Image 1 (spheres, rainbow, N blue to C red):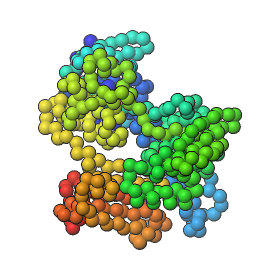
Image 2 (image 1 turned 90 degrees about the horizontal axis):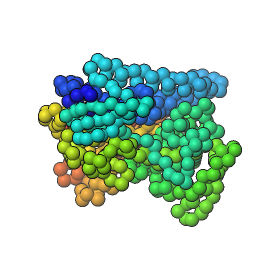
Image 3 (image 1 turned 30 degrees about the vertical axis):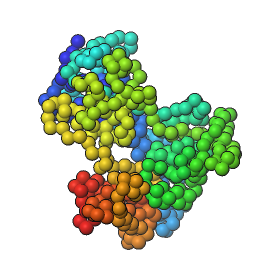
Image 4 (image 1 turned 180 degrees about the vertical axis):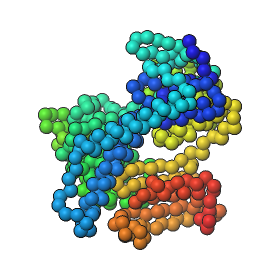
Length: 436
């Protein structure tokens, strides 16, 4: 039996950031992890490896552009095995970095599956053996896994999720992506650049449906220019695996049904909370039918000393949100000043091609809330720097309240917008006006 001030279950960007904050606040801490390596989905199977592949794909695009500018000759070729080795190397080094953070901050790391015995006890099970650890406060940071649905059973070969598609031995000749959210559009961009014939299927009427309508329209044009076939307002009725691939049956909103054969189907329809086995019901912790936990503005569950953060909540499923929630939970548990998160200023970044970035209200949402608006829009096609680098797609759109001139939302699509967005986040946080 070990005793701590804080135990964190889960070592993703919410969990390990919370553990380090606890150590910095002078609290004894342990972090429980069932995986072989620390870092969680984001680092091992999500954001980081995906961005490594996106970077490689972007370089392919740049080389193609260099060829058009007369800076090189010959065919553009790539070695997929090296692309995959680079992805694996980035993940390994990043995981080692988290491990170092735990050691340097004297944070214990019991390995195994963690569950709640009671409000102050965590049971860790590994290889059939159980150990118990006591804590004054517990932070649940168990994350999420790709969502799957029965009609499209994942076999890891023909029907895959974002986990399996990271480790393919070679790019498929053809790929259907079910879901045009962040994950779907990013992988469509990656494999499209590596020569795969991509079909992107979305049940809603536009790609990236959580973004501003103008952004979705611009992305639609960009995907078409990249020869990515986009099917919106379309449902995948059936997916039949056969020797050569997957036969997909699609139904449009007009009722028209057609079939399309592809080598592989990527199911990118969202993620599911990993809360099964935590013993939430045993402790009476409030959660919905899908396992998402209810918390207050300080990340506390209805059991006051148990906190929950990250993808197991109905807040945006983003790494930086989980990190911010982890800091908030630990500061509150430490008795320090804790300021609730303003979700209106949470940045969204999608690393498709072209990139998409936004913060604040969309134009439609602002109107729905009753604001009278001023909207400004500037196209990259009118910008000298964009012409110089031959990336003129996209725009910056700024939405402001007409009465007080306060900036309500900033929406961008185009080159480097995920880097530019930080200034927009600061503008909203400081209640900046259009004039300023």
